[in-house]
Image (cartoon, rainbow, N blue to C red; front, top):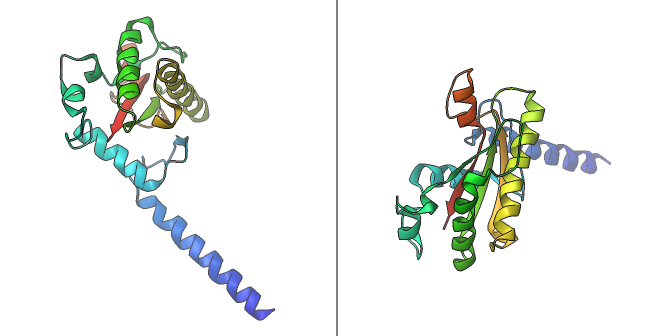
Length: 182
């Protein structure tokens, strides 16, 4: 009996230590994010690195296409209307270009990061960010990408690109970002 209690206590201590160390990742201080498709802390670090460098480290078969500023692939942010997860018509050609690229580069993967503006509850905004990322994922898969190439994560209102409380700020924060990993 004592040996079983000791094993259980050690296991519980290991879990607590591992949980305490997980706060060292690069998530926002509030820690709010809905992660889909099993993203680990290491993958989240890869996402942050990809965001800071663009498309990976610039190597790989399609790096030139992804880094061409005149290409529709250079557009990596899809904006949404208020309280909507429908991909806007003005972004259909961009989504088509990304889907075609993914279809022709099956080794390439992307993470779609869903975001919202600050209006609404935290929970609602996380769900809205998730719906936006999933809507974009659905479009990419319908247009040629494989489901295994596309992961999603929602940050809701936690990572605004513009701090402000007006419609111009809100419109910049209602988005899904396409982050390539190679």
